[in-house]
Length: 360
Image (tube, rainbow, N blue to C red):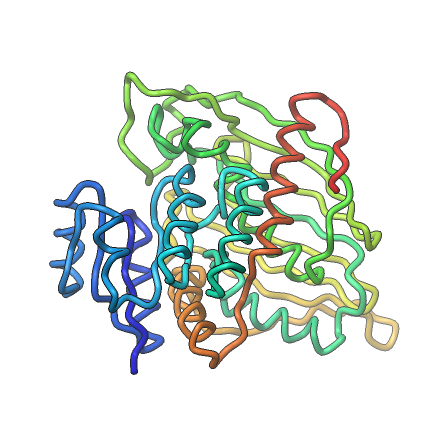
């Protein structure tokens, strides 16, 4: 019998979630949004039989096995916990929550419910990432000592005064929004436990409308804009590994770049996407490479994979269904999400205090 899924939130990622669930053979049978008209619209576009105007209604539906959450960051933890308590598996958009303390509460709820809780770290599901993990797991890279994670934009602020730029609703700016390469780098490194973080943030351009991105939400003139535009930092791990990061919505770079580069004892590697000036996924340039020494020569190997303009979003959602059905290993878990949020919390604290922050 097919897994039956309900959706909370009619946000921009909803079409990817739906496509992924259907690809995995699940049925999307309901959607809820506090703006009922938004839920109705998505339901009509995707042939979803039932739409609701409240969370309580959709969670009361006994036919629903799993819930996906596509709402502003502030509501990730409370809705995930509510859905788990209602006996549903949960797939939650990134970031896991506003902070690590909320993720700890989510883990308690997951364990009590005995259900699956996963996050949409979709870049783990990209063909490039899967191919690189295959190479890493085969031993080609050896031990990965260090890595550099980057998601930088020149003009990528997702609207002014909306929930993205309101720290109370979002938890922060690009550091928490564009966490994907930080997560992917740690995934390649074996998900080590973080030890220390030192970071700085910059708010240059965060109120300059010349730096607004080509996507996002409408500006709110009466709204709040109190987050960073860019974050730079360095992480050490209990294993002795190290990771640097550069993450920005608005920064003086040539073009939008999304990448993880690593250095191992057997090989180095890179997974990279370079966007066109308009941030168009379909025209982006993808690279997946391994760097090795062979017969005394430096050799670079290109790993060929199928094109994936959606950056793994569809396959990430499909993996959630396969994981709860027991036909595939989950691509992520709550404990990994917790360590990621501990790093983000520490990065903001370090930027505020000007001091390195130890992570327990």
